[in-house]
Image 1 (cartoon, one colour):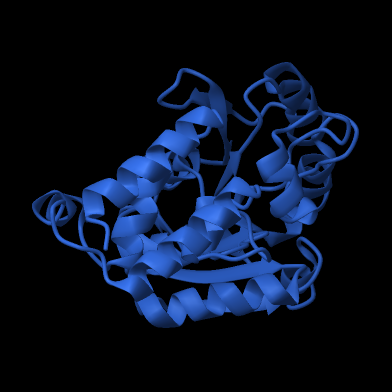
Image 2: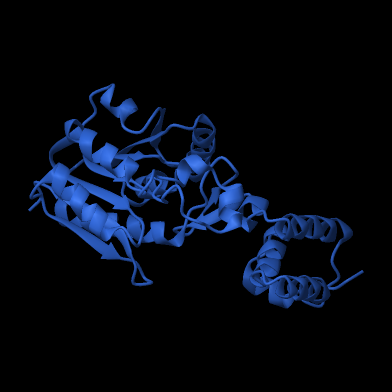
Amino acid sequence: MKTVRELIKEAESKLDDEHKDVNVAKVLFYHLAKKEPHELYLMMNEEVEPELEKAFLAGMEEYYQGKPIQYIKGCESFFGRDFKVNEDVLIPRYETEELVENILYRIDDYFNDYKEIHLCDVGTGSGAIAITLALEEPRLKVIATDISKEALVVAQDNAKTLGANVEFRNGDMLQPLLDTHEKVDIFVSNPPYIPNDQDIEAMVKDNEPHVALFGGNDGLYFYRKIFKEVKPLLNDRALLAFEMGFDQRELMETAIKEFFGDYPFEIIKDINGKDRMLFIYYNLK
């Protein structure tokens, strides 16, 4: 039998040879062993049970074949919580955690005296944004929509597991909200924003749902659709919050001017210094 150290070293060596992320070996092992990273170091000289070794090697094989580690594990951490993910949903990204954080700051700034705040998340996917906000801010009443019924199964599962009170609706973009004449204080969306013809890494393109990735010829198809249709959903004072592509500032500014005229907005950089978040302040002072 191999020790934990030997098993991981062999995997790391192969990952290195194939120019893949060597950290994947440890990440997969401590997930399968149900251990925290610091516990792994204490068991490096222990022998690996045959069942665990078999599961580890099978998972690594899937990774070599091009499957993302998050789908192999079946979960991804977001804002300190584990979210179930599979091929029906986009893998939550660190940049999106920053969007959530910035929304929470703005709730304090603009809705501090509200007893109840109505928020919608359009194109919710795994539910990461909607569920996290509902858990972090108890005053929020959250509705989340997605066109994919399969994605909503994952999102509902996540809400149940994490104990979040979110209402999920199936339908195209804003339609499920317009149908019932909802009014919201905060509109959130992380729509698909990759231009159709842009090359993206194979692991993303071959595994993650295209309906959640691609946003028309210039990547802004869904933003323009939202900007055009969103006003009936907004309360007199409202915040609109979006994630966006890092190279879309000029296109985005033009689109905002077209649909929102002189309403103030800001585009904020993420931790890597890339334009990544858009906030539109609708009658917010």
